[in-house]
Image (cartoon, rainbow, N blue to C red; front, side):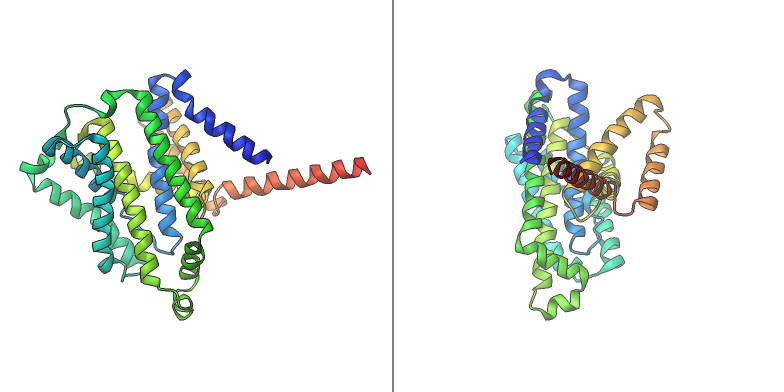
Length: 316
């Protein structure tokens, strides 16, 4: 009950942030929520045992789909965001029949190559996409209103967290855990391995497309080099590793922690912050391979149990 109360208070405080925070802080948290959502989707796919490096590619695909629907076809920006996610999901569904036959390093390399393939295709369609120069939209989402943009990405992120929690409590959780632990045993137990892998690949890709579409509409600009940047793969991956994989809380904590640290480092050392950022990640991976969240939770539980024992002893 106490944990639920703390959670509700935290959610309400986060929702009310635009009421007392300026545009700069809202922009920082917008970025944190974007990377938090991508980190969660990367972790969701990792729960199947497949290390996907296609996050940046599907993110960029959703971004370009949304931008082109608005600039070329006059779609409503909100509708284009949904369609950006839909297109990324449909693309993942079609590609899944090929790439999901691969395993381990072969799957990882193939999904990483998708980002380059999508970027090359975009560059070579200048009349439609603007080529290497990209496309500039006439208006940013909500005319650039920082509060409305914040509330939208906050709502989207809560939705992604909800999907992650649902997956961890549904029968899908047991199926993908079995696949990750031993695919042959899972198949012999009657689990349709390909169907579950395809489901996870499509749902995570669709979410990445939606987040990419929002990002494009927020900044009213898409360009191959920036939109398909490896930052949209490496930073979410690092956040999940630092927070702790195979969970919902891990990527959330990792995104908040590294997002705030990254922003602070940019202010005090604009050209060297990535070095410190990288050192932090290496140290956590080396000395806390399970991430920082699980040790903290264990420590808190231990303190709570000790406190409970002391209270019981005093009462007796």
